[in-house]
Length: 472
Image 1 (cartoon, rainbow, N blue to C red):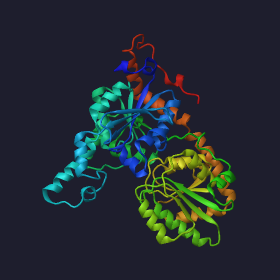
Image 2 (cartoon, helix red, strand yellow):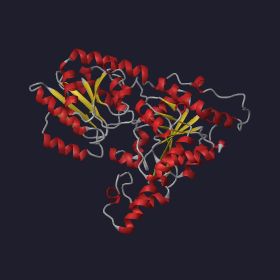
Image 3 (tube, helix red, strand yellow):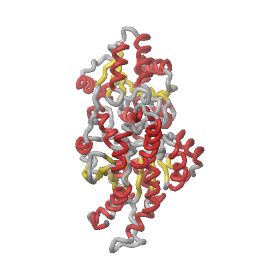
Image 4 (cartoon, rainbow, N blue to C red):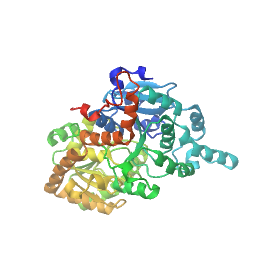
């Protein structure tokens, strides 16, 4: 397999990243993004932040996904980052299960497959439990990891059946397997309850940004602290930066004197707390009659129909919703720069990249205390934001009203927000942490062994990725 890559590529430490979705289209379809658009334009999510950080740190990342829409491995270059991507075909057994269990992510069998009784119900319950373990084409994945000369595999979530399967595969391949925390903090089946503790024990390490989640993992699984790294999700702070507000408002048709609050992300009513936001905004408008306050919502998703219904019922003319998935960071940055204030009402997050993007664009933030938020806004107003309790529309309305009515304070906090983003969430800062943790927890040893098989190399001439870090 070593001969399948150019010799100079084989000398670079390589890290594979694997997303958590059973099928990549389960994620992309709700955003209205095709696989071709994913290849040509897509830049959202934590995963491309990791890719760019690893590139800056002198390592070679590749992205692996699974799809039911390809019949053989489909390899291509991701245009925005230049990273190698391989989409693997889903196993036939999983495709067969998916024809019976239409929504394997559902909490109940009724939500997953409809109303069923008797033996059929028992069978479907078993299939739903097994499906997450059968979605990963293990033999094809192992072949691809060897083909690309990977020195480590990073799974998106550890509370996920794909992680369990990958750790077992990694043990057989003598390949270190890591995982990040992006919001998955619950087990979804009884089988996971049995398997997960052992797979965590066998993993190489975890990268977790939220301190509360680190505490949970250490307490529940007695996971050794030395195998956990507190690493934040990164963004490109050179790309995500504020532009002139007057210019941004002219380009987005927002009146110069309006006071604007913005939110962007996937439209998931309960998870993202959009019901709480609408309630809070109703209170803000009620308490400030006559003021030109505007709420700008950017994004679409699974619950777009429900958001549309609620807006119709509330009849709030000050809410402006752009109901489409925005993938162009320049366009999103323009909307963020046109706003005065950012709001994050989420009930649940892992380590919200959208919030970091807002900080980098110099926006004061009002955020609910979902996982990861307290870490991003560590120090509260000193970090550029105000944290309020989850599910508390009154507290959110009070914080929004305070910032909207105090322009000086809002501007000061926005300046602090930008400084916070530059210090803690840049690609370079996070890339260094990722590289060092992966390298010292198994990737370096795997690379050294791999170099021994390449002509002219030996254990005495190891590659040091920090010496080859990008200076972009």
